[in-house]
Length: 244
Length: 244
Image 1: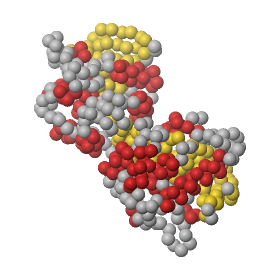
Image 2: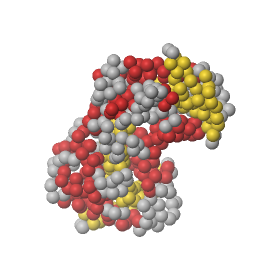
Image 3: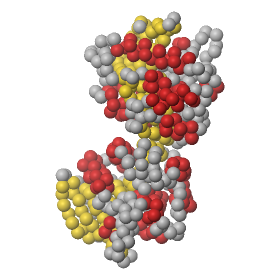
């Protein structure tokens, strides 16, 4: 892992890093308390389609977890997103469902991304101001499409906020299998008027989660209209399960 | 209004009162801070079928609102419930759906109960330690069957926690009409495995609520399994909208 930028703004330290893995570079942003020492919980934040690690709500959530809880938070660019966009103009600015077609049913992209997150946890927990503490995951929409299999595969993740996704699309079978194996506490968010995922498919996914300790929060509005209330709820939920 | 009992236990004053209205007696329990002076928010708590104003979760919620927020809270017995059971053994110990048959489609019982709540607000807001402050409503299951029309009819109620009910049964048409007229913030609770209300009917009722500021919280489990988490969420939600 190489840190390529290191700044402090409004009480939060933000470091840009790159992790080299299998000939590729995984670019990330890390938020920690300035002058932090010793181990602390780490929250992985997965961004949505067409977004990046610098998405406004990603950065806001990362900073919130540092300022309010003293946690470390990290976001990495998803496949062909952010600094991993190709130079040839294949950037996924298209609406989500077009982008969804990029996923092959063999889940290669998903499995690669699980590897990216594992390498990120390994690298960050070796840092003296993060250490080996509890790990949580937060990601909606594409952050759940890629993140739900990550939560299922990675036993170090002990709590997750997921949502804005349904049991549908080319990866449905794998997602259903992965969902059933998840046993950690889950907060699942949905938008009542989501134009991308049919309501009954969203309910199917919530129902498929293996966790007995799960809850669904729904609000009126479209896919992108998740209210501040649920970022507050996310913080409370992560804090309850990740501790001090 | 006559107070028939007045005790203080663990920092909460509890008063048993009777309100006479149209030749009937409406028995209630009032929780306030001991030695309170001046006006404060008032939360109306509607109990479930076969329950009463002394139901454990009703009393616990009332005491919680007093201890944590300094509010006043009140519960009254529903029709033929609690101290309003008839002497001839017609007490509704039957499961809810049998009891549901007691409702006639002309909603006389519901409209009577709206009158009971209105008289209760009138009487309590005349008390010097309650006064004319903001009013909230909390009631699940039968507490929504009777409470949703109350929230729709009573403009003094500015926030409501409802749930454990679907758009079904003999009062469906009226409930749908009333739901559409509700415009205050609503927290709506449901149980994912509710054995009394089909999931799609519960979604129908949440969808029918006219409020733009509404959210649905769902948990695994049966009708009666609402977790402590949602009592905490109820308190937070009421506090946000009723103020100090």
